[in-house]
Image (tube, rainbow, N blue to C red; front, side, top):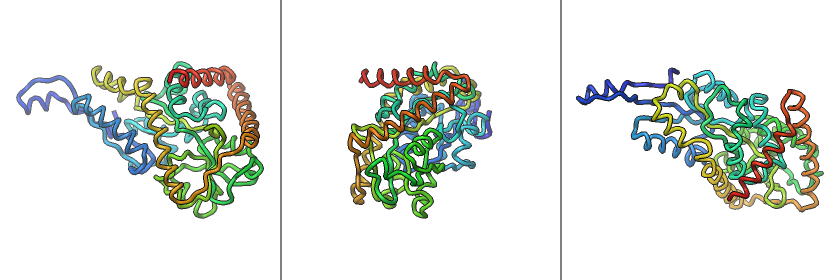
Length: 344
Protein backbone atom coordinates (compact mmCIF):
# COMPACT_ATOMS: atom_id res chain seq x y z
CA UNK A 1 0.00 0.00 0.00
CA UNK A 2 1.38 3.41 -0.90
CA UNK A 3 1.35 6.52 1.20
CA UNK A 4 -0.98 8.00 -1.43
CA UNK A 5 -3.60 5.28 -0.93
CA UNK A 6 -6.06 5.44 1.89
CA UNK A 7 -7.87 2.26 2.75
CA UNK A 8 -10.37 3.14 5.45
CA UNK A 9 -12.35 0.38 7.14
CA UNK A 10 -16.01 0.67 6.30
CA UNK A 11 -16.66 -1.16 9.53
CA UNK A 12 -15.54 1.94 11.38
CA UNK A 13 -17.85 4.04 9.23
CA UNK A 14 -20.67 1.64 9.85
CA UNK A 15 -20.10 1.76 13.59
CA UNK A 16 -20.42 5.51 13.50
CA UNK A 17 -23.68 5.11 11.60
CA UNK A 18 -24.89 2.32 13.88
CA UNK A 19 -24.83 -0.30 11.10
CA UNK A 20 -22.60 -3.23 10.20
CA UNK A 21 -20.57 -3.47 7.03
CA UNK A 22 -17.48 -5.24 5.76
CA UNK A 23 -16.55 -3.25 2.64
CA UNK A 24 -13.73 -0.75 2.41
CA UNK A 25 -13.58 2.82 1.21
CA UNK A 26 -10.68 3.49 -1.17
CA UNK A 27 -9.11 6.75 -2.28
CA UNK A 28 -6.70 6.49 -5.19
CA UNK A 29 -4.43 9.18 -6.61
CA UNK A 30 -4.03 9.38 -10.38
CA UNK A 31 -0.87 11.17 -11.56
CA UNK A 32 -0.18 12.49 -15.07
CA UNK A 33 1.91 15.00 -16.98
CA UNK A 34 -0.53 17.30 -18.82
CA UNK A 35 -2.29 20.40 -17.47
CA UNK A 36 -5.91 20.21 -16.29
CA UNK A 37 -7.01 22.25 -19.33
CA UNK A 38 -5.88 19.46 -21.67
CA UNK A 39 -8.45 17.35 -23.45
CA UNK A 40 -6.88 14.22 -21.99
CA UNK A 41 -7.56 15.47 -18.46
CA UNK A 42 -10.95 17.09 -18.98
CA UNK A 43 -12.57 14.67 -21.38
CA UNK A 44 -10.94 11.31 -20.69
CA UNK A 45 -9.29 10.98 -17.28
CA UNK A 46 -11.71 13.02 -15.18
CA UNK A 47 -14.85 11.38 -16.65
CA UNK A 48 -13.28 7.93 -16.27
CA UNK A 49 -12.56 8.64 -12.60
CA UNK A 50 -16.08 9.98 -12.07
CA UNK A 51 -17.57 6.87 -13.67
CA UNK A 52 -15.62 4.62 -11.31
CA UNK A 53 -16.80 6.67 -8.36
CA UNK A 54 -20.43 6.57 -9.53
CA UNK A 55 -20.50 2.85 -10.27
CA UNK A 56 -18.87 2.05 -6.92
CA UNK A 57 -21.46 4.28 -5.19
CA UNK A 58 -18.64 6.34 -3.73
CA UNK A 59 -16.67 3.43 -2.32
CA UNK A 60 -13.81 4.30 -4.70
CA UNK A 61 -12.71 7.93 -4.87
CA UNK A 62 -10.11 8.99 -7.43
CA UNK A 63 -8.20 12.22 -6.99
CA UNK A 64 -6.29 13.45 -10.05
CA UNK A 65 -2.89 15.14 -9.81
CA UNK A 66 -2.14 16.74 -13.21
CA UNK A 67 1.03 18.50 -14.40
CA UNK A 68 3.30 16.20 -12.36
CA UNK A 69 1.85 17.67 -9.16
CA UNK A 70 3.11 14.72 -7.12
CA UNK A 71 6.68 15.44 -8.20
CA UNK A 72 9.15 13.90 -10.59
CA UNK A 73 9.42 14.11 -14.35
CA UNK A 74 7.12 12.63 -17.00
CA UNK A 75 9.61 9.85 -17.74
CA UNK A 76 9.36 8.75 -14.10
CA UNK A 77 5.60 8.08 -14.14
CA UNK A 78 5.92 4.41 -15.06
CA UNK A 79 8.41 3.85 -12.25
CA UNK A 80 6.11 5.62 -9.82
CA UNK A 81 3.17 3.31 -10.48
CA UNK A 82 5.35 0.21 -10.71
CA UNK A 83 7.06 0.91 -7.39
CA UNK A 84 3.99 2.14 -5.54
CA UNK A 85 4.77 5.85 -5.33
CA UNK A 86 1.54 6.44 -7.25
CA UNK A 87 -1.68 4.44 -7.37
CA UNK A 88 -2.63 5.14 -10.99
CA UNK A 89 -0.72 6.94 -13.73
CA UNK A 90 -1.44 7.99 -17.27
CA UNK A 91 1.77 8.11 -19.25
CA UNK A 92 3.35 7.88 -22.68
CA UNK A 93 5.17 4.58 -23.27
CA UNK A 94 7.80 6.40 -25.30
CA UNK A 95 8.94 8.28 -22.20
CA UNK A 96 10.64 5.08 -20.99
CA UNK A 97 12.47 3.73 -24.05
CA UNK A 98 13.20 0.02 -24.06
CA UNK A 99 10.71 -0.86 -21.33
CA UNK A 100 7.86 -1.77 -23.72
CA UNK A 101 9.61 -3.34 -26.73
CA UNK A 102 6.58 -5.25 -28.02
CA UNK A 103 4.01 -2.48 -27.67
CA UNK A 104 6.27 -0.14 -29.59
CA UNK A 105 5.17 -1.90 -32.79
CA UNK A 106 1.89 0.06 -32.75
CA UNK A 107 3.78 3.37 -32.85
CA UNK A 108 5.35 2.59 -36.19
CA UNK A 109 4.40 4.40 -39.38
CA UNK A 110 2.67 2.05 -41.81
CA UNK A 111 1.35 0.06 -38.84
CA UNK A 112 -0.75 2.84 -37.35
CA UNK A 113 -3.01 3.89 -40.21
CA UNK A 114 -4.21 7.28 -39.01
CA UNK A 115 -7.14 6.21 -36.78
CA UNK A 116 -6.95 6.46 -33.01
CA UNK A 117 -10.00 4.23 -32.73
CA UNK A 118 -8.58 1.41 -34.84
CA UNK A 119 -5.18 1.44 -33.14
CA UNK A 120 -6.66 1.74 -29.65
CA UNK A 121 -8.98 -1.22 -30.23
CA UNK A 122 -6.08 -3.16 -31.77
CA UNK A 123 -3.82 -2.42 -28.79
CA UNK A 124 -6.30 -3.67 -26.23
CA UNK A 125 -7.24 -6.68 -28.34
CA UNK A 126 -3.54 -7.60 -28.53
CA UNK A 127 -2.75 -7.77 -24.82
CA UNK A 128 -1.84 -11.46 -25.03
CA UNK A 129 0.77 -10.57 -27.65
CA UNK A 130 2.06 -7.66 -25.54
CA UNK A 131 1.68 -9.11 -22.04
CA UNK A 132 5.39 -9.45 -21.24
CA UNK A 133 5.77 -5.67 -21.50
CA UNK A 134 3.37 -5.12 -18.60
CA UNK A 135 4.21 -7.82 -16.08
CA UNK A 136 4.95 -5.25 -13.34
CA UNK A 137 1.73 -3.19 -13.48
CA UNK A 138 -2.01 -3.58 -13.93
CA UNK A 139 -2.87 -2.09 -17.31
CA UNK A 140 -6.27 -0.43 -17.26
CA UNK A 141 -6.16 0.46 -20.93
CA UNK A 142 -3.76 1.36 -23.73
CA UNK A 143 -4.55 3.90 -26.41
CA UNK A 144 -3.03 5.97 -29.18
CA UNK A 145 -3.75 9.43 -30.45
CA UNK A 146 -4.79 10.03 -34.05
CA UNK A 147 -1.19 10.18 -35.18
CA UNK A 148 1.75 12.52 -35.63
CA UNK A 149 2.10 15.20 -38.26
CA UNK A 150 4.82 17.81 -38.69
CA UNK A 151 4.24 21.13 -36.97
CA UNK A 152 6.64 23.77 -38.33
CA UNK A 153 7.76 26.87 -36.46
CA UNK A 154 9.93 27.87 -39.40
CA UNK A 155 9.75 27.24 -43.13
CA UNK A 156 6.85 25.00 -44.16
CA UNK A 157 7.60 21.44 -45.30
CA UNK A 158 6.06 20.92 -48.73
CA UNK A 159 8.27 18.09 -49.95
CA UNK A 160 10.46 15.29 -48.62
CA UNK A 161 13.55 17.36 -49.37
CA UNK A 162 12.29 20.29 -47.27
CA UNK A 163 12.69 18.25 -44.08
CA UNK A 164 16.44 17.78 -44.51
CA UNK A 165 18.52 19.31 -41.73
CA UNK A 166 15.61 20.52 -39.60
CA UNK A 167 15.55 19.92 -35.85
CA UNK A 168 12.25 18.26 -34.96
CA UNK A 169 10.96 17.23 -31.56
CA UNK A 170 10.40 13.51 -31.32
CA UNK A 171 7.76 11.91 -29.09
CA UNK A 172 9.54 8.57 -28.84
CA UNK A 173 12.42 6.40 -29.94
CA UNK A 174 10.57 5.27 -33.05
CA UNK A 175 9.61 8.87 -33.73
CA UNK A 176 13.31 9.72 -33.71
CA UNK A 177 13.90 7.07 -36.38
CA UNK A 178 11.11 8.53 -38.51
CA UNK A 179 12.65 11.99 -38.24
CA UNK A 180 16.13 10.68 -39.07
CA UNK A 181 14.74 8.83 -42.08
CA UNK A 182 13.45 12.20 -43.35
CA UNK A 183 16.98 13.56 -43.17
CA UNK A 184 16.07 15.73 -40.18
CA UNK A 185 17.56 15.77 -36.68
CA UNK A 186 15.45 14.35 -33.83
CA UNK A 187 15.36 16.22 -30.52
CA UNK A 188 13.87 14.34 -27.60
CA UNK A 189 11.76 16.18 -25.01
CA UNK A 190 8.50 15.73 -23.10
CA UNK A 191 5.66 17.54 -24.84
CA UNK A 192 5.08 20.13 -22.02
CA UNK A 193 8.50 21.63 -22.82
CA UNK A 194 7.77 22.00 -26.54
CA UNK A 195 6.36 25.55 -26.59
CA UNK A 196 9.47 27.05 -25.00
CA UNK A 197 11.72 25.01 -27.31
CA UNK A 198 9.83 26.24 -30.37
CA UNK A 199 9.79 29.86 -29.14
CA UNK A 200 13.55 29.84 -28.51
CA UNK A 201 14.41 28.10 -31.76
CA UNK A 202 15.75 25.01 -30.03
CA UNK A 203 13.63 23.04 -32.51
CA UNK A 204 12.26 23.96 -35.93
CA UNK A 205 9.14 21.95 -35.36
CA UNK A 206 7.74 18.76 -33.90
CA UNK A 207 5.97 15.50 -34.50
CA UNK A 208 2.73 15.83 -32.52
CA UNK A 209 -0.99 15.37 -33.28
CA UNK A 210 -3.49 18.18 -33.74
CA UNK A 211 -4.95 17.31 -30.34
CA UNK A 212 -2.20 18.89 -28.26
CA UNK A 213 -2.29 22.30 -29.99
CA UNK A 214 -4.81 24.15 -27.74
CA UNK A 215 -3.38 22.85 -24.47
CA UNK A 216 0.10 24.17 -25.36
CA UNK A 217 -1.04 27.18 -27.45
CA UNK A 218 1.04 25.92 -30.35
CA UNK A 219 -1.13 27.89 -32.77
CA UNK A 220 0.74 30.98 -31.55
CA UNK A 221 4.12 29.47 -32.48
CA UNK A 222 3.51 27.60 -35.71
CA UNK A 223 3.59 28.64 -39.35
CA UNK A 224 2.40 25.42 -40.97
CA UNK A 225 1.49 21.78 -40.49
CA UNK A 226 2.36 18.98 -42.90
CA UNK A 227 0.32 15.79 -43.33
CA UNK A 228 0.55 12.69 -45.46
CA UNK A 229 -2.18 12.11 -48.06
CA UNK A 230 -5.29 9.98 -47.41
CA UNK A 231 -5.37 10.73 -43.69
CA UNK A 232 -2.20 8.77 -42.94
CA UNK A 233 0.25 9.95 -40.28
CA UNK A 234 3.93 9.70 -39.39
CA UNK A 235 3.28 6.99 -36.81
CA UNK A 236 1.64 7.57 -33.47
CA UNK A 237 2.30 7.43 -29.74
CA UNK A 238 1.00 4.79 -27.34
CA UNK A 239 -0.31 5.82 -23.93
CA UNK A 240 -1.15 3.76 -20.89
CA UNK A 241 -3.47 4.15 -17.93
CA UNK A 242 -1.99 1.77 -15.37
CA UNK A 243 -2.55 0.90 -11.73
CA UNK A 244 -0.11 -0.38 -9.14
CA UNK A 245 -0.58 -4.14 -9.15
CA UNK A 246 -0.58 -4.52 -5.35
CA UNK A 247 -3.16 -1.76 -4.95
CA UNK A 248 -5.39 -3.46 -7.51
CA UNK A 249 -4.96 -6.88 -5.90
CA UNK A 250 -5.82 -5.48 -2.46
CA UNK A 251 -9.20 -4.17 -3.61
CA UNK A 252 -12.29 -6.17 -2.67
CA UNK A 253 -13.43 -8.42 -5.51
CA UNK A 254 -16.52 -6.36 -6.30
CA UNK A 255 -14.46 -3.16 -6.60
CA UNK A 256 -11.95 -4.90 -8.86
CA UNK A 257 -14.89 -5.89 -11.03
CA UNK A 258 -15.88 -2.23 -11.40
CA UNK A 259 -12.33 -1.31 -12.43
CA UNK A 260 -12.29 -4.21 -14.90
CA UNK A 261 -15.64 -3.19 -16.41
CA UNK A 262 -14.06 0.17 -17.28
CA UNK A 263 -10.82 -1.23 -18.64
CA UNK A 264 -9.39 -2.83 -21.75
CA UNK A 265 -11.72 -3.79 -24.56
CA UNK A 266 -14.70 -2.58 -22.55
CA UNK A 267 -13.65 1.02 -23.17
CA UNK A 268 -11.23 0.81 -26.11
CA UNK A 269 -13.58 1.96 -28.88
CA UNK A 270 -14.90 4.81 -26.74
CA UNK A 271 -11.40 6.00 -25.80
CA UNK A 272 -10.23 5.82 -29.41
CA UNK A 273 -13.23 7.82 -30.60
CA UNK A 274 -12.50 10.45 -27.97
CA UNK A 275 -8.99 10.91 -29.32
CA UNK A 276 -10.25 11.25 -32.87
CA UNK A 277 -12.61 13.95 -31.63
CA UNK A 278 -9.79 15.69 -29.77
CA UNK A 279 -8.28 16.61 -33.14
CA UNK A 280 -11.07 19.03 -34.02
CA UNK A 281 -10.30 21.83 -31.52
CA UNK A 282 -6.64 21.71 -32.55
CA UNK A 283 -7.50 22.05 -36.22
CA UNK A 284 -9.87 24.92 -35.42
CA UNK A 285 -7.27 26.74 -33.32
CA UNK A 286 -4.69 26.52 -36.10
CA UNK A 287 -7.18 27.69 -38.73
CA UNK A 288 -8.22 30.64 -36.57
CA UNK A 289 -4.57 31.67 -36.24
CA UNK A 290 -3.95 31.42 -39.96
CA UNK A 291 -1.55 28.49 -39.72
CA UNK A 292 -1.17 26.88 -43.14
CA UNK A 293 -2.31 23.25 -43.42
CA UNK A 294 -0.31 21.33 -46.01
CA UNK A 295 -1.41 17.92 -47.28
CA UNK A 296 1.38 16.32 -49.28
CA UNK A 297 0.83 15.08 -52.81
CA UNK A 298 0.74 11.35 -53.48
CA UNK A 299 4.20 11.65 -55.05
CA UNK A 300 5.73 13.35 -52.01
CA UNK A 301 3.84 11.07 -49.64
CA UNK A 302 5.37 8.05 -51.37
CA UNK A 303 8.85 9.40 -50.59
CA UNK A 304 8.02 9.60 -46.89
CA UNK A 305 6.45 6.13 -47.02
CA UNK A 306 9.62 4.71 -48.52
CA UNK A 307 11.60 6.20 -45.64
CA UNK A 308 9.05 4.78 -43.20
CA UNK A 309 9.44 1.29 -44.64
CA UNK A 310 13.10 1.49 -43.65
CA UNK A 311 12.07 2.47 -40.13
CA UNK A 312 9.78 -0.55 -39.85
CA UNK A 313 12.59 -2.84 -41.01
CA UNK A 314 15.03 -1.18 -38.60
CA UNK A 315 12.61 -1.87 -35.76
CA UNK A 316 12.16 -5.50 -36.80
CA UNK A 317 15.92 -6.03 -36.99
CA UNK A 318 16.53 -4.45 -33.59
CA UNK A 319 13.91 -6.31 -31.58
CA UNK A 320 14.68 -9.59 -33.36
CA UNK A 321 18.30 -9.24 -32.24
CA UNK A 322 16.96 -9.10 -28.68
CA UNK A 323 15.12 -12.37 -29.06
CA UNK A 324 11.70 -10.96 -29.98
CA UNK A 325 10.06 -11.95 -33.26
CA UNK A 326 9.74 -8.46 -34.73
CA UNK A 327 8.33 -9.56 -38.06
CA UNK A 328 5.55 -11.52 -36.33
CA UNK A 329 4.72 -8.52 -34.16
CA UNK A 330 4.45 -6.22 -37.18
CA UNK A 331 2.26 -8.74 -38.97
CA UNK A 332 0.11 -9.22 -35.86
CA UNK A 333 -0.24 -5.50 -35.21
CA UNK A 334 -1.18 -4.72 -38.81
CA UNK A 335 -3.75 -7.51 -38.76
CA UNK A 336 -5.21 -6.22 -35.49
CA UNK A 337 -5.49 -2.68 -36.85
CA UNK A 338 -7.12 -3.96 -40.06
CA UNK A 339 -9.55 -6.10 -38.09
CA UNK A 340 -10.49 -3.15 -35.90
CA UNK A 341 -11.10 -1.00 -38.98
CA UNK A 342 -13.20 -3.70 -40.63
CA UNK A 343 -15.35 -4.11 -37.51
CA UNK A 344 -16.50 -0.49 -37.50
